[in-house]
View (tube, rainbow, N blue to C red):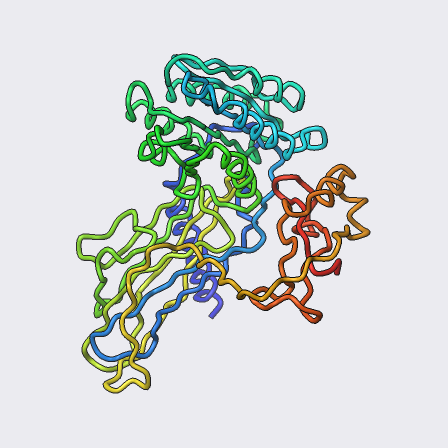
Amino acid sequence: MRRILFPSIARAIVLAVVVAATALAALPTRPASAQPPPSASSCVPRPEAVAEPGVLAPGEVTRVTLRAAFDGCGVISSELHIVLVLDGSGSMADLQVTVKAAAVALVDALMLPVTPGTQVGVVMFNDAAKVLCQLTNRRSQAVGCIQRVGAAGNTCIDCGIKAGLGVLNHGRAEATDRDRLREVMIVLSDGANNSGCGPMMGAAGQARGQGIQLFPICLGGGCDVACMRSIATSPRSFYEARQVGQVGSIFEAIRGQLAFGWLRRLVITATLAANMTLIEDTANPPAASVSPDLRTLRWDGSDVWLPSPVYRFDVRVPMATGTYPVLTTSTAAFTDVVRAGGAFAFPIPRVEVMLNPPTLTPGPATPTSDRPPLPTAIGPTATPAPPDPAACPRLAARIPKAAIDAALADPSRVGGWGVPCRVGQPIGPMNPPRRWLDLRNGNLPWHPVFNGVVFKCGCG
């Protein structure tokens, strides 16, 4: 028995390793670093797969939802490099005061004096691009460079992107922890690129190909919205500001995006069972590819935001009654923030097809967005004023006093302030608003971007 069992187990283990390695072989890599990346990701996937409705009549349509939930993914990078690529053309003359103030507010929010791994660079572009300062951890230098952005000449956005890429490349060469380095480029412009969209897309492609997150901001009615949107790392990375006063909140929103965990790449493949029929053009987000026989969908996403990316598509069930699996296989491979890899399989959802289902639910409409719906207003009832904010006692030993003082001085700028402890229910004596300042994740060290403060119901 041992002579038969042990070789079988060994062959199974070898086969599993080969499958995982093959799935990840196509994932892109960043330039070689001094230290090899970890061999396995710390991310723990919790894949979920459902078909709703699960009981339906012959020929009806069900929606398949694949949710790739993750736990344990590192959200704190040892080093964060951000380059601001700012429009310095003549059309920005009346806008620069507000834009500069918003950029300075972003630098202040990064709290450079107490986060030595965070650095900011500044590039200005008009007819050409000029590096106003390389990456620096000195607030005074970064702010001084922002204040030097002018307003004259034309608009060469691709020049600015290329110069910004050079700043990040220079910083990457000097990074002490390149495996955990996160690189971000924020590109702001109020006009169209002089040489058209092609050169912009080419320059942006070079940046994205090196794993740099690109956040374009389109300011005002003269901006080329379509082109600026096309250079973003993901749809959620693009921002449009109709009024210059919106720039400050956009910078803050970008900083908020950086606070969440992310995957450098996530590839999901789902193959339908033979008796299931895909409803075309229902994949949301759109699949990167669909096989010619319409049986296999493949998503290939970069810069995927956590904790739970969701993928949906509609399927028509067979005419014959019975209980059926909707898929034959559904697998995923991913690369995490430190370029470590992993792979997993989704459970196989099943449906029951019967002539007279208890509740006959019509087939779902094609979704228009994978984002959660906006919260519903509670109603016209007046909301009591929230009590004074307070900091949890343990916070003083974990974060700088300046961060606590700033949050308490203007709590409206901090997440969770005034939100009822039981969301969706009116504030009252049994459902007070959140007022206790604490770390977003109490198990991780403080970081102004990746693990900042929020208001909670209590200190726990």
